[in-house]
Length: 189
Image (cartoon, rainbow, N blue to C red; front, side):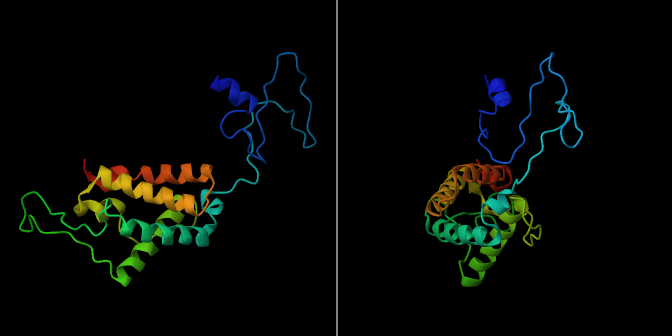
């Protein structure tokens, strides 16, 4: 069924505008040259025209900045996320064992967080690649983030996407990108 939908162009993404569809060549069909001299055989890749990166479909820098502003306030206020890491302690064998890893939401820290989130989302969605933050894994290593906390943050991001009326297709793409970071962020399973 999926193959039939792909060939007909009726499956997911079938209604996209500006995308040249692949054609099925039947054995008795003659090859008809196109105005450019191509014979129309299916051995050539379909060409995407007018395709925009997710970055552009989210509104570029202003759109991502608006999303981050809404999401940041929402996630900082969500006790399920525990963004400030209250009560989270280090484990293991170190001199700092049982020391709290609290994050102080000063205006400077919040602005730095927003800046890095905007840069990361821009890079991850096909925008400019000028990320100035630490690597994702090392910056989250000592936070002991759990799956339920990560899930709550994803829920907050979804709420921000809904509030800003981001189309479903773009929401799915962005949420998949963020979900792909789970192995680097969640350390407490």
